Length: 238
Image (cartoon, rainbow, N blue to C red; front, side, top):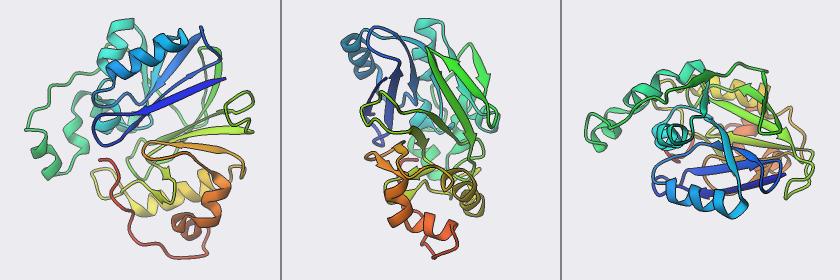
Protein backbone atom coordinates (compact mmCIF):
# COMPACT_ATOMS: atom_id res chain seq x y z
CA UNK A 1 0.00 0.00 0.00
CA UNK A 2 1.15 3.51 -0.81
CA UNK A 3 0.33 6.46 1.43
CA UNK A 4 1.84 9.86 0.89
CA UNK A 5 0.88 13.25 2.26
CA UNK A 6 1.84 16.89 2.42
CA UNK A 7 0.64 20.01 4.27
CA UNK A 8 -1.52 22.57 2.49
CA UNK A 9 -0.37 26.15 2.01
CA UNK A 10 -2.82 27.41 4.65
CA UNK A 11 -3.48 26.09 8.17
CA UNK A 12 -0.99 23.22 7.72
CA UNK A 13 -3.83 20.86 6.75
CA UNK A 14 -2.55 17.45 5.74
CA UNK A 15 -3.70 16.18 2.34
CA UNK A 16 -3.18 12.44 1.85
CA UNK A 17 -3.08 10.20 -1.20
CA UNK A 18 -3.76 6.50 -0.62
CA UNK A 19 -3.38 3.71 -3.19
CA UNK A 20 -2.86 -0.03 -3.35
CA UNK A 21 0.50 0.70 -4.95
CA UNK A 22 2.33 2.84 -7.54
CA UNK A 23 0.68 3.07 -10.94
CA UNK A 24 -2.77 2.34 -9.49
CA UNK A 25 -5.96 4.23 -8.80
CA UNK A 26 -5.99 6.20 -5.54
CA UNK A 27 -8.17 8.19 -3.19
CA UNK A 28 -7.37 11.77 -2.20
CA UNK A 29 -8.18 12.71 1.39
CA UNK A 30 -8.85 16.33 2.45
CA UNK A 31 -7.57 18.49 -0.42
CA UNK A 32 -7.28 21.86 1.31
CA UNK A 33 -6.13 25.34 0.36
CA UNK A 34 -3.44 25.63 -2.31
CA UNK A 35 -2.75 21.90 -2.73
CA UNK A 36 -3.30 21.46 -6.47
CA UNK A 37 0.32 21.73 -7.58
CA UNK A 38 1.62 19.49 -4.78
CA UNK A 39 -1.14 16.98 -5.47
CA UNK A 40 -0.34 16.87 -9.18
CA UNK A 41 3.33 16.30 -8.34
CA UNK A 42 2.52 13.43 -5.97
CA UNK A 43 0.21 11.82 -8.52
CA UNK A 44 2.80 12.11 -11.28
CA UNK A 45 5.63 10.83 -9.08
CA UNK A 46 3.73 7.65 -8.21
CA UNK A 47 1.77 7.39 -11.50
CA UNK A 48 -1.54 7.49 -9.64
CA UNK A 49 -5.06 8.11 -10.93
CA UNK A 50 -7.64 9.52 -8.46
CA UNK A 51 -10.87 7.53 -8.20
CA UNK A 52 -12.52 9.57 -5.42
CA UNK A 53 -12.02 12.29 -2.84
CA UNK A 54 -12.72 11.48 0.82
CA UNK A 55 -13.44 14.27 3.28
CA UNK A 56 -12.93 13.76 7.01
CA UNK A 57 -15.21 16.77 7.64
CA UNK A 58 -16.55 19.90 6.02
CA UNK A 59 -14.25 22.68 7.23
CA UNK A 60 -12.84 24.89 4.51
CA UNK A 61 -9.21 24.08 5.27
CA UNK A 62 -9.94 20.44 4.39
CA UNK A 63 -12.33 20.93 1.47
CA UNK A 64 -11.23 24.06 -0.40
CA UNK A 65 -9.85 22.20 -3.43
CA UNK A 66 -12.41 19.38 -3.57
CA UNK A 67 -14.43 20.85 -6.46
CA UNK A 68 -11.45 21.39 -8.79
CA UNK A 69 -9.91 18.01 -7.92
CA UNK A 70 -13.20 16.21 -8.58
CA UNK A 71 -14.23 18.34 -11.54
CA UNK A 72 -10.99 17.87 -13.44
CA UNK A 73 -11.35 14.10 -13.24
CA UNK A 74 -15.10 13.50 -13.08
CA UNK A 75 -14.89 11.75 -9.70
CA UNK A 76 -17.07 11.64 -6.58
CA UNK A 77 -16.53 13.47 -3.30
CA UNK A 78 -17.56 11.57 -0.14
CA UNK A 79 -18.68 13.47 2.98
CA UNK A 80 -20.89 12.73 5.98
CA UNK A 81 -24.37 14.29 5.67
CA UNK A 82 -23.80 16.18 8.91
CA UNK A 83 -21.27 18.36 7.07
CA UNK A 84 -22.74 18.26 3.56
CA UNK A 85 -24.09 21.83 3.74
CA UNK A 86 -20.57 23.18 4.26
CA UNK A 87 -19.55 22.02 0.79
CA UNK A 88 -21.97 24.51 -0.74
CA UNK A 89 -21.61 27.18 1.97
CA UNK A 90 -18.35 26.84 3.94
CA UNK A 91 -19.18 29.89 6.05
CA UNK A 92 -21.65 27.69 7.96
CA UNK A 93 -18.69 26.01 9.65
CA UNK A 94 -16.81 29.20 10.51
CA UNK A 95 -16.93 31.57 13.43
CA UNK A 96 -17.82 35.20 12.70
CA UNK A 97 -14.18 36.31 12.84
CA UNK A 98 -13.02 33.53 10.53
CA UNK A 99 -15.78 34.27 8.03
CA UNK A 100 -14.71 37.92 8.07
CA UNK A 101 -11.08 36.89 7.53
CA UNK A 102 -12.09 35.14 4.32
CA UNK A 103 -13.78 38.33 3.11
CA UNK A 104 -17.45 37.54 3.41
CA UNK A 105 -18.76 35.56 0.42
CA UNK A 106 -16.37 32.73 -0.41
CA UNK A 107 -15.65 31.74 -4.04
CA UNK A 108 -16.73 28.16 -3.60
CA UNK A 109 -19.00 25.53 -5.12
CA UNK A 110 -20.05 21.99 -4.25
CA UNK A 111 -18.62 19.24 -6.48
CA UNK A 112 -20.95 17.93 -9.17
CA UNK A 113 -21.07 14.44 -7.67
CA UNK A 114 -21.31 14.06 -3.87
CA UNK A 115 -21.95 10.80 -2.01
CA UNK A 116 -22.83 10.69 1.67
CA UNK A 117 -20.96 8.58 4.21
CA UNK A 118 -22.64 6.46 6.88
CA UNK A 119 -21.27 5.19 10.17
CA UNK A 120 -19.80 1.71 9.87
CA UNK A 121 -19.90 1.68 6.07
CA UNK A 122 -17.15 -0.04 4.09
CA UNK A 123 -16.03 1.78 0.96
CA UNK A 124 -14.48 -0.29 -1.83
CA UNK A 125 -12.53 2.30 -3.80
CA UNK A 126 -9.32 2.14 -5.84
CA UNK A 127 -8.66 -1.42 -4.70
CA UNK A 128 -8.88 -0.34 -1.06
CA UNK A 129 -11.27 -1.38 1.72
CA UNK A 130 -11.97 1.68 3.86
CA UNK A 131 -14.13 1.66 6.99
CA UNK A 132 -16.00 4.81 7.99
CA UNK A 133 -16.52 5.76 11.65
CA UNK A 134 -18.76 8.73 12.40
CA UNK A 135 -16.97 10.63 15.18
CA UNK A 136 -18.70 13.99 15.77
CA UNK A 137 -17.46 16.64 18.15
CA UNK A 138 -15.14 18.78 16.03
CA UNK A 139 -18.03 19.06 13.57
CA UNK A 140 -21.33 17.25 13.39
CA UNK A 141 -20.16 15.18 10.43
CA UNK A 142 -16.56 14.37 11.34
CA UNK A 143 -15.45 10.86 10.44
CA UNK A 144 -12.45 8.56 10.76
CA UNK A 145 -11.27 6.49 7.80
CA UNK A 146 -9.68 3.16 8.70
CA UNK A 147 -7.96 0.66 6.44
CA UNK A 148 -5.69 -2.36 6.88
CA UNK A 149 -2.10 -1.29 7.38
CA UNK A 150 -0.30 -4.40 6.08
CA UNK A 151 1.96 -3.31 3.26
CA UNK A 152 1.85 0.32 4.40
CA UNK A 153 5.10 2.17 5.21
CA UNK A 154 4.49 1.28 8.88
CA UNK A 155 3.47 -2.38 8.45
CA UNK A 156 0.80 -1.70 11.07
CA UNK A 157 -2.33 -3.69 11.72
CA UNK A 158 -4.39 -0.65 10.81
CA UNK A 159 -4.08 2.93 9.58
CA UNK A 160 -6.55 5.60 10.70
CA UNK A 161 -6.97 8.92 8.90
CA UNK A 162 -8.35 10.88 11.81
CA UNK A 163 -9.02 14.33 10.36
CA UNK A 164 -9.44 16.79 13.22
CA UNK A 165 -10.77 14.25 15.70
CA UNK A 166 -7.35 13.24 17.03
CA UNK A 167 -3.92 14.84 16.78
CA UNK A 168 -0.57 13.92 18.28
CA UNK A 169 -1.03 15.14 21.86
CA UNK A 170 -4.34 16.90 21.30
CA UNK A 171 -7.74 16.91 19.58
CA UNK A 172 -9.58 19.23 17.21
CA UNK A 173 -11.16 22.37 18.56
CA UNK A 174 -14.82 22.17 19.54
CA UNK A 175 -15.75 25.87 19.70
CA UNK A 176 -16.88 26.36 16.08
CA UNK A 177 -20.45 25.89 14.77
CA UNK A 178 -21.39 22.21 15.06
CA UNK A 179 -18.66 21.50 17.60
CA UNK A 180 -19.26 20.01 21.05
CA UNK A 181 -16.72 18.98 23.66
CA UNK A 182 -19.02 16.43 25.36
CA UNK A 183 -19.78 14.90 21.96
CA UNK A 184 -16.07 14.81 21.16
CA UNK A 185 -15.37 12.99 24.42
CA UNK A 186 -17.98 10.40 23.48
CA UNK A 187 -16.38 9.93 20.08
CA UNK A 188 -12.95 9.51 21.66
CA UNK A 189 -14.33 6.95 24.09
CA UNK A 190 -16.42 4.97 21.60
CA UNK A 191 -14.50 5.30 18.34
CA UNK A 192 -10.85 6.02 19.18
CA UNK A 193 -10.05 4.23 22.43
CA UNK A 194 -11.20 0.79 21.15
CA UNK A 195 -8.59 0.89 18.35
CA UNK A 196 -5.48 -1.28 18.68
CA UNK A 197 -2.36 0.36 20.12
CA UNK A 198 -0.34 -0.20 16.95
CA UNK A 199 -2.91 1.63 14.79
CA UNK A 200 -1.05 4.38 12.94
CA UNK A 201 -2.91 7.70 13.12
CA UNK A 202 -2.55 10.16 10.24
CA UNK A 203 -4.16 13.36 11.52
CA UNK A 204 -5.54 16.38 9.73
CA UNK A 205 -2.76 18.55 11.16
CA UNK A 206 0.68 17.74 12.49
CA UNK A 207 2.76 14.56 12.60
CA UNK A 208 1.68 10.93 12.51
CA UNK A 209 1.27 9.09 15.79
CA UNK A 210 -0.15 5.81 17.12
CA UNK A 211 -3.13 4.97 19.26
CA UNK A 212 -0.79 3.44 21.86
CA UNK A 213 1.24 6.63 22.10
CA UNK A 214 -1.88 8.77 22.44
CA UNK A 215 -3.47 6.37 24.93
CA UNK A 216 -0.39 6.80 27.13
CA UNK A 217 0.13 10.55 26.81
CA UNK A 218 -2.83 12.40 25.29
CA UNK A 219 -4.77 14.14 28.13
CA UNK A 220 -8.01 14.09 26.13
CA UNK A 221 -7.91 10.33 25.79
CA UNK A 222 -7.20 10.10 29.52
CA UNK A 223 -10.30 12.19 30.15
CA UNK A 224 -12.39 10.14 27.73
CA UNK A 225 -11.28 6.99 29.53
CA UNK A 226 -12.28 8.53 32.85
CA UNK A 227 -8.74 8.77 34.17
CA UNK A 228 -8.04 12.49 33.97
CA UNK A 229 -9.25 15.98 33.12
CA UNK A 230 -8.04 17.90 30.09
CA UNK A 231 -8.02 21.60 29.31
CA UNK A 232 -9.88 22.91 26.23
CA UNK A 233 -8.25 21.76 22.98
CA UNK A 234 -5.63 24.04 21.50
CA UNK A 235 -6.62 25.72 18.28
CA UNK A 236 -5.20 23.76 15.35
CA UNK A 237 -6.60 24.44 11.90
CA UNK A 238 -10.03 26.01 11.60
